[in-house]
Amino acid sequence: MADSYYDPADLRKFGKITEWSEELGTKFFDYYGKVFEEGALSAREKSLIALAVSHVVKCPYCIDAYTKDGLQRGITKEEMMEAVHVGAAIESGATLVHGVQMMNKYNKLSM
Amino acid sequence: MEQSILTELKKAAKKSLKARHNDLADNHRQLQILNGGLFADGELPYFKNKIAETNQFPLKPNTLEILQINVGYMCNQVCEHCHVDAGPDRKEIMTRETMEQCLEVIRNTGAHTLDLTGGAPEMNPNFRWFVEEASKAGIKDFIVRSNLTIILANKKYYDLPEFFKKHNVHVVSSMPHYTRGKTDKQRGDGVFDKSIKALQMLNAVGYGMPDSSLRLDLVYNPSGAFLPTDQAALEHDFKKALKEDFDIDFHNLFSITNLPISRFLDYLIASENYEDYMYALVDAYNPAAVANVMCTNTISVGWDGWLYDCDFNQMLDLKVASTVKHIKDYNEDLLNDRDIVISQHCYGCTAGAGSSCQGSVA
View 1 (cartoon, chains in turn purple, red):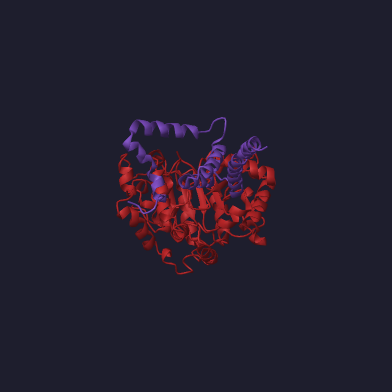
View 2: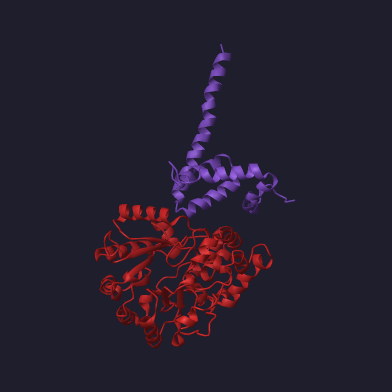
């Protein structure tokens, strides 16, 4: 067994999850591949969304994968960092908007 | 990457591996790396075994279409990724005698494309004479691979756009990115601004304009340890950015994968990206690209007249496996009967949509 939870080499073994459940694994990878095809959004735009979400869900594998994907697509580091800030802004906003709940509760309990 | 490694690489990047007496300047050492490690351990399949899965071993040539001639390794730039290990300190220059032998072949070849490369081919003292003579042979497509900055490197090169135009040369130029930062990082400080200026000079004489017969194509190769993506999408981005920011026009973008040899191999090892890069190449292996890989339609001629299956094999000194090995003994029928010499660097040309000096192949 590895002595740490995350090993970069595990990323390229991702496809192996299909070995223990072929039907679900195959369905997932088909879906995944389809999602990232050119559509109403370009593959480039999807790559930047994926990078932002990777940070929000704090997935080191996804961050490695979509930083590399962005480089491959010629996406600049400025574009990548802006995408990360979009994710961070939504995440911190999601925390802060709960401040209204706190205020509501505070007001309700206070005389 | 560790800052110290980066600094070391930058410092070293002003000289060729050869001038630095780096052990990777030795082709045997490069082949040892390419045949060892992950491949010797059985982690990754040898290229030979991979193509055998689809009955493509031994790899054989199709009809010869392109004669690619390397007129010397001297260059005004020392790009970090250069597979030629070219630079100002390289003295390997094709002689006029070898050029005469090449001209004899050019006049009689069945190939429709002549492709001059280097180094900076323009730095060969007989370059202009050679272009003038070769252009008389009636070859359909006559390519010169120009690094752009050479046009501004010295007053004697300022008229190159006019010279190319006069001989109806098809100019193919390197441009790693449409932003300054990425370009200069790979190719050296100031390269981006000079390249932009050179492209504008080429546009000014008619090169690359939408309906112009003066062909101007750009070559993109990744500035780092990653593979290129969809050529058409990159071309779209390059066209948009270069037009909007600098009013530059060009025809096509060729997307080329960096092969793990010479200075790019040195970079991969120093930055600890070698293993991941080889995995990425093998993972992206595409048997359809094998059928059209450029060694099946190209002969590469070295600065000293030796013959190779491609420019990469030339740098690894893997000569053609034929009774004909030198331009002075050139025989197209005999050469076309050869087996193509392969090693693990070949995965670079078969990844994804494939890669060749003419861009994607699949």
